[in-house]
Image 1 (cartoon, rainbow, N blue to C red):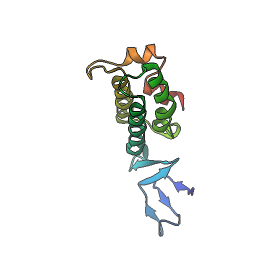
Image 2: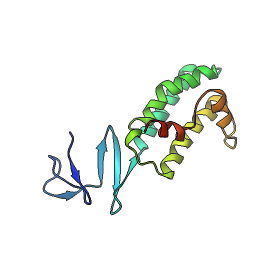
Image 3: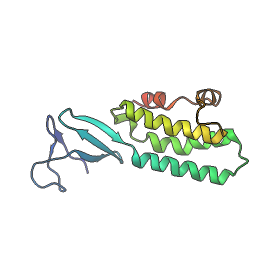
Length: 142
């Protein structure tokens, strides 16, 4: 259900709120968004998306097994996991913390597929696999 909010305060009249109450947390496009007052900056709450990303990623690696084909794993992660983490990114106000949490998940996926050390940067792996860093993918979708 869509409802309209008026700046500078988010006073919403909807069936779930009685009267004019201040709302600071609501659902948008299947994900959650937090409004920080008094600045009215909407930030994405990625806990649900990251959980779905890691869940589908672990399922893919379990099905592929220990002696997996790395290009196939990268293709499956790009096909099934990446859309779950980028769903709704068109409307996010992306902060440095959001970029960092997205980058950590994307980089950890490459580190785990190729069994590299956590200290090594996965940028070269992403380059050779034809994948962009997650910050560029989020900016492309806007």
